[in-house]
Length: 88
Image 1 (spheres, rainbow, N blue to C red):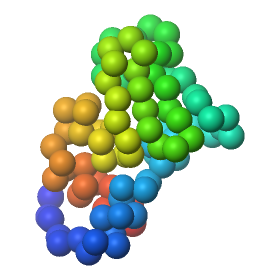
Image 2 (cartoon, rainbow, N blue to C red):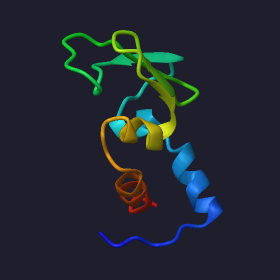
Image 3 (spheres, helix red, strand yellow):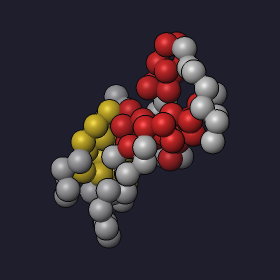
């Protein structure tokens, strides 16, 4: 994995990437529930909101943006940023 220095503009683009788009969730609703990636989940308990925030009603993990979403799954910030940057 090669790391490159990102500009402030590129970092902002990464911060603004939609979690819903990355996960392929297509809905115009304000809230969409998915199976929580932060714990073993049998029923959808994690809400993805239209403002790019997320909250699991079972394990209480919360955050905003794709970077935060994937870091809270146990990935390093460098890995998440590198993976998202490769999609630019």
